[in-house]
Length: 179
Image 1 (cartoon, helix red, strand yellow):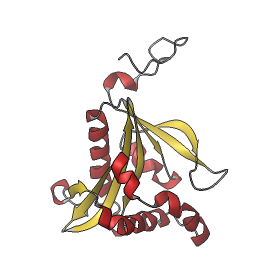
Image 2 (tube, one colour; image 1 turned 180 degrees about the vertical axis):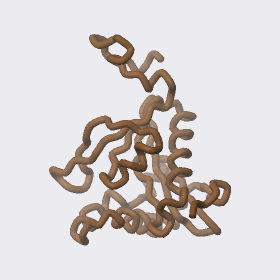
Image 3 (cartoon, rainbow, N blue to C red; image 1 turned 90 degrees about the vertical axis):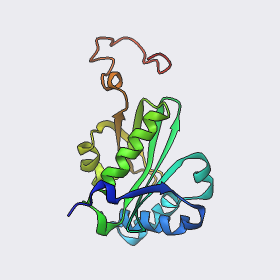
Image 4 (cartoon, rainbow, N blue to C red; image 1 turned 30 degrees about the vertical axis):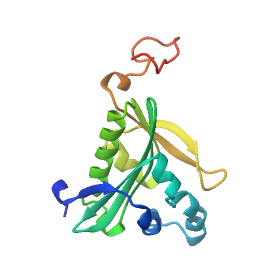
């Protein structure tokens, strides 16, 4: 049963809870059936650090006072990166991921980004497609040498949703400075 969005409270992550939030990321990643060796290889990439809190935006989703998910984005000019979006396994399919995703989109857009990329776990791709993301190729895994991940992209402004080819500008370079 879905949680009403009003029952999911978003707040900033705190330095004193980084270890617990990192463990939440690992539990969430493990739902895709990865073995212990794979999960250990992902540990560094899934660990939130105090340094990241200073240079990225991290929100924790709470229900009834307990963390049930988190989302991390980095925004640089017109580009945003959805670095992490993880939900407690028992809360999957109840609306927390949707609330966090909508926060990421709105926050990136408000910060001036025109597109957001997501290097997604293959198991999470259907969720991101339902949220409006499109395939944008592949990206190297930050944890496993030689492994690639599906790269998805979300247009954050209406005009950004049209590629140069679709608009009839096949020979022109995309200029992110003028829109």
